[in-house]
Length: 526
Image (tube, rainbow, N blue to C red; front, side, top):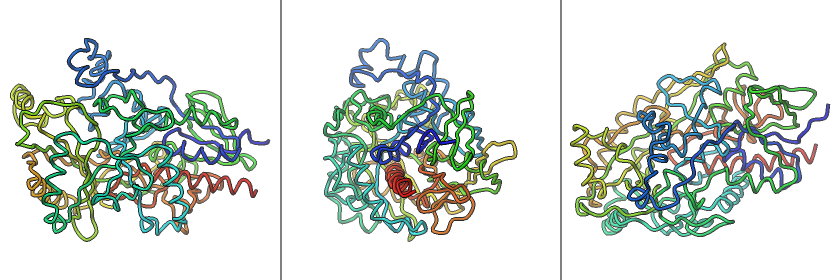
């Protein structure tokens, strides 16, 4: 029987939408399925964060939630998981995809647009050396980096010490304005700049998928401080913004409330089945973009592969900085995601990456539980201190993780988390070095605030089905095609051959665009 579509894409996040563009532009008939049944999301706050906090009598609905979502998520590793406006993004992922974790925080999304509905918007380009084991044509990947960067909108273009590290300035908009605290730190860095190279430290503007100039119907960031809650201007990129554009192509079809439970080969085509109904669709090619964890389970189930696979994640930590000279500064609106970023060489083989954020758009509850005092005393302290504080994070390369993914006989994917033995010493060295560096920039890394996250807390997962020049079972070729499953391509982070300390979403999207173009060529030549 003739397949209904040329290509089926499982997932509507950054990978799925990026793979879809070259396919539909070539005139192919493409079906995209995702599992979102009811978005159930609250509208974005319509006024600046500080104005809403002072005047909005209904603010409890988007800060706490009518079903007390924020209070029920107090132990969540990230404030993103606690905001009622994003509750639908994370709801039901592990249970629906039959994923269980041990000593690992496994997070994914069933929502249209996937995790890009609530991400930190950090972007970076990886050099060709990071793909040496995959034998890909880096010139083609570079074309895709440019295509995706110009499409989604990136800001942060600056001639600074991180220009080469990010490698995106040729395709970027100007940077967003810094708040007073970040501007002071940057000024101090530039004033003492000669002292930092010897410490292996470089500082610069964050490169983020947030608009400083209007683009394709989206407005520029208005510095409202609502980044954590939801952007009313659509200045922050989300893959969900791509769906209306893709639907303008006659060959594109989008089906929601379709949770892929299995796929099977029938007469030279691939058929996907829905867990929630009897619906099924068939195509010549199948592109998996369901997120690393869900994609891995689907592939291992089809291969009947039960041997453990390495799962890469980035060991991470968070910390609090205090700028004493700005004590008493009034809270001010501003961009709520990364404003300044850094790269820190820890040893000959490990570089750390991190960013700092304003505390303005964060609830005080994010900090009270971390202060070694009574809650009442903590609130009194932070009420006076937070306006002169910044939050920082740090990520290490994925090869320093030690996680495994294994398909159990009952069909569940079991994730076991761990880190390499050198992580405690590296984190201790990072804390010590950052403390000295930020002191030179007029900031104090607050005692006891440097907190190392549990495995998986980074929500950067990759490499379970890595691209290799000569793939084995459980791996993919240079175009993401699964060894042993002809016509099935992995286009999300599961096929990345490496996970560096840098933000990896832009690389996922560029690689998906590259694979999408190769599928077009293969189908046209068939």
